[in-house]
Length: 558
Image (cartoon, rainbow, N blue to C red; front, side):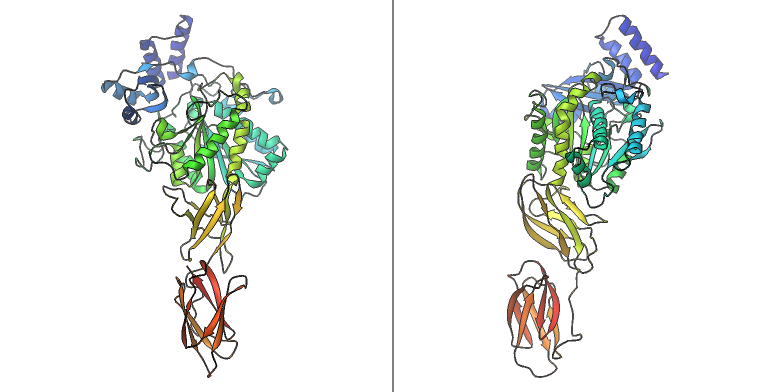
């Protein structure tokens, strides 16, 4: 009934030639939709922080905010004395012919697919290219629509960086959805060595539309009438836990779409991600909620400028605003509960928000143009997932993979440290070029700190073995030489090692030899008394062996 009323209002207004509606007409239209689209003058910067708690601020244009609100939020704004200027909703400005999935060979990516065509495409890719692509669903919404994914690799996903591309968390922002569908097609069909390398080196997840109820609000056969919010009037990009504003910054329960995405992030440790939006042309990097800079702010500026700069090779005006195509989210305008901040803080994933078209719902005939602008940048952003510091963390005794924390000393905070993950014990740390003190730590193991140097656009592979706590603490025990029993302590040591020998017979002074894991002799000396003190502070952190009278014991320097 709601949709019938909506289209009756639209038909009447269009027949009357009122392409620019009066505010009363727009208010009636939006009351029917349950979603308001409007602008508000911005008197001072602090007001943006207040308004972002009252409605969904979409962007800042000059001295006015462009906003969305549900019925409750809009009435609250009016009650507080605000006077919004209502605007024609983006998805109602023009009605486009849809592609129903037929004559696939003639489809030129210049028409929006119906919901059924979209679903059929996703499934068909996995069916036609099973050696590259698998299809899965996060779940089914109350409407019957699904959150669908295609996953790409060469059949061996373990031990690789995991990469996530998604779009259209706001249902009326459709350019990214089309970019994602076309990228899926390329990953399935292209034999370009670059594409094959991505399939070999990454484990890639793509979901073109993560708010299908918003996109197909007007029905499965049209995007006319698409809404920003989901079926429950929630802005899904304000619905995530926020480390600076609490678990429910929007005052709503976690939506089904939000829960599904959080469960996905818990299951798969993504290294990098991007979420595509519309309404502007800019890369919005962390934080959205928090004024202090992200620990990897220099890296974020590097990769975001790379993306924007590559689009300028096709059109120097595209993504040319702000800082030449990039902006810190909080500096632009603060929002709370964004998925970007959730992924960066809670999930150790470097996620960016990519605003890829000023029109929210552009004429689909322009989609090939947006593909040309973004294609190289999309591939290059995925490749950034392979740079930085990578490796495996394992048990030095058994070789078993470990779940360890990998922390950049004097650098990491607010969730920027990463972890190694089972089943391979692999870790992946994109980072700006430089020299870093990297500490590897795991419960039940001695930590290890290494000084590592890596350059921009370079991959450093650093595998690490951690020694179990207490390993090598041995007192007495069988000996293979003269009958000498040997004890070393404290173990681990911070620099001074005590060596105690309990000789079975009177022997002359004995020689000790300290070696590393590959058998190189690092220190030698004499054991002159029964308990000898040895200075090992010159040795780097790690595990070593001391041999006295053919008896060998292990010890750890930390």
